[in-house]
Image (tube, rainbow over the protein chains, first blue to last red):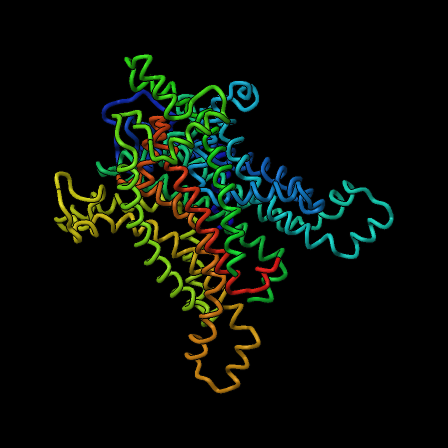
Amino acid sequence: MRSSRIIHIGCCAFADYGTVRGQSVGAKASELFLAAQKIAWLGTDDIGRDIYSRLIYGIRVSLIIGLASAIISVAVGCVVGAVAGFRGGLFDDVVMRITDLFLAFPFLVALLVVRNMLGALSWLSPIIGNSGSIRFIIFLLAIFGWMGVARIVRGQVLSLKEREFIEASRAVGASRRYIILRHLLPNSIGPIMVALTFSVVGAIIGEATLSFFGYGPQAGAGTTSLGLLVGAAKGAVQTGFWWMAVFPCAALVIISLCINFIGDALRDATDPRLEMGQ
Amino acid sequence: MLRYVVRRIAWAIPTLLLVTFLVYVALRLGTNPVNSYLRSNPRASAEKIAQYKELNGLGSNYVTGYWGWLKHYVTLDWPRSIKGSREVLPALKDALANSLRLGAAATVVGVVIGLGIGVFAALRPGGRRDVTVNTAAFIGISIPPYISAILLQLLFAVYWSRWFGHTLFPTSGVYPPGHSGFNAVLMAKHMALPMIVVAIQIIAVYSRYMRSSLLDVMNSDYMRTARSKGISESQILIRHGMRNALIPVVTIAALDVGSIVGGLIITENIFDYPGMGLYFLRAFNDGDFPLMMPWMVLIVASILLFNLIADVTYAWLDPRIRLE
């Protein structure tokens, strides 16, 4: 699995050299809807674009969205979770109530409603871009991503803060910020890394889901993404253009599987409780 | 126990009001109901627009607006939909009935198979079948529902009829177009594919829950005691193991409605199945505020209800929680 991931990243990083033909060559009637064959390894789509090339570019965008929004949500989640767990009280209650609420709500509905709301707030657009841009999607997914991380970090902090070394640190007069930054967060690095990998998958799938329903990054901006490709597959199914559906779907599943496997392995490596259970 | 339940219900009502208020604000900001009304009815008279605003509580202020909406909502004086001016309540009822049928079928199939597989894997932890089940469940979790939906649709809509000359499972709607009346066989055939898609997710999740829960129970002291008393292995599994392993699974199940609804939205949309999910997406695409608000209230209320059920079951099983 690891080697296939390296191949993936390699293909995407060197997309400009590896792709057979760019985003779109001038459409020739003879090149529309070709099945997989020599000139187009994975076939061509409705306007004659090579699906392999589109996939490579799409995976690029999807990985950027996944990584960027995962990093933002892990950063926010760590701070919020650590503070909530360490201070407790009203802040903790409010944050955890909000988190519960959003985690209980159907993810897609919350995503769509908040997307429209953010898009309508014009004073936000200088920061997060307009609702069709990649930046907007990154922020949107980060808004929902931090809650799961905050929950994990909070749980970790709650169990750590009763330990002796924290008490010792407090006894010698360490400030709250110092304890959080120097003791609590470094000691929870294992679960945080696991949460990071899972939120990369979450963001990639979230983007794909949004695009699938036409609410993701807009194709007009010269971008493509896995979600857009899978969404295009929806229209191709009834007519039997199988390659347009199978290859993007397979790419998405392989990516999410690979990252999930990494997360699972990280969890096995960092969580001592699991070893005893097995 | 009764006091605990009453207290939980007393908490649920303000929560419902608060959440619906937030949803109201979010929808008003996001979809701009007045604009979408004008888009669908460009020649509406000023009178009609005023009436529309009044019924939906779209006054200038969010708080008074919400209050106005709530009054109409509670008295069942619901505004008609923006597009086509349909009655909302019958549409919602239809959608709910279709979704409940699909959701219930998928949940039953998914939970039964999932729990069975979980037990099957937990009996020999670390063995070959455990590894196989684990890997399969892992792959199942990693596949988003629309992927399995698209692939199933491709297989059954196109290739099955090409290979075998007849359609086994139709890929859209509840009945073939033009059909009227009730026909259980046709209905089941139409429901089969969406049900499989939703059930795959449930199976993947529950087999993992059940496996880890049963493994925990199997290692506990009372299982050893039961074994040392000389009860047969299958008796131990059913009377002691399954019973205790199901407790955490049941409480998780009640909290899981949100994700099942999420799966239904995606699946229904792909298979054109006229349930709650398709209802919501259509309403959302049109910015149809009168259609969306009752849907949201229903979803929020059912999430709260299932949360309540989970809490009460848990308190019933574990008396320590009640006293907190």
